[in-house]
Amino acid sequence: MFPKDENGKIRYSDTDFTDTWKAMELLVDEGLCKAIGLSNFNRKQVDRVSAIARVPVSVLQVECNPYLTQEDLVSYCESKNIVMTAYSPLGSPARPWIKEEDPFPLKDPIVGTIAKAHNKTPAQVLIHFQLQRGLIVLAKSVTPARIKENFEVLDFELSSEEMKAISGLNRNYRGCLLEWLSDHEHHPFFKNGERTDDCK
Ligand SMILES: NC(=O)c1ccc[n+]([C@@H]2O[C@H](COP(=O)([O-])OP(=O)(O)OC[C@H]3O[C@@H](n4cnc5c(N)ncnc54)[C@H](OP(=O)(O)O)[C@@H]3O)[C@@H](O)[C@H]2O)c1
Image (cartoon, rainbow, N blue to C red):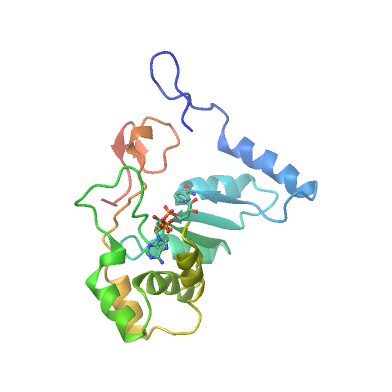
């Protein structure tokens, strides 16, 4: 996944992402895909692509769950007619670098209480929360029963108080920070090795 050079440094591509976008536009021209989008880009990077885009940016896929609600980015995407896809909507509990002390939305007591009130599971509440905000949700499971469970999320509504309570859990926590790539010149949340976003 992350090839290294002889000094153990990750071999980054030196292709600028605007050139990658132009290549992706050719795929639309050829009818190989209908729409193209971005992932893990910050707002400035999306703006940079939008400024040169012949085919508009359709979607931005980013980490998003109640501990990282991405309110500003959601509003920004709405203003630009970009659909946001929420990845790791359950908090990515099996990511290889997770630590014991990391926050865990599936076990959040507020999510648990709301789930109980609707006779749903915490996972179903976490998925429905994003759908009710108008986001696309990308939950992953290799377990057939959970895959089925994760689809059964359209037969209930969260009240505005419940939506507010879940949004209130935000703590700008990124589980998918990838700080080991912080020396990359286009890392969305680092510049010269220093954090540039206000997330923890
Ligand atoms: N664009 C990007 O950079 C990026 C980054 C990260 C992830 N993603 C994508 O986003 C998708 C989801 O992200 P993710 O896998 O990090 O996190 P996630 O969907 O938040 O969590 C997946 C984990 O939750 C468990 N799970 C699934 N449904 C459950 C349920 N109903 N109850 C309890 N546990 C449940 C899964 O276990 P089992 O599988 O064992 O059932 C798995 O361990 C993936 O398809 C991934 O490719 C994209």
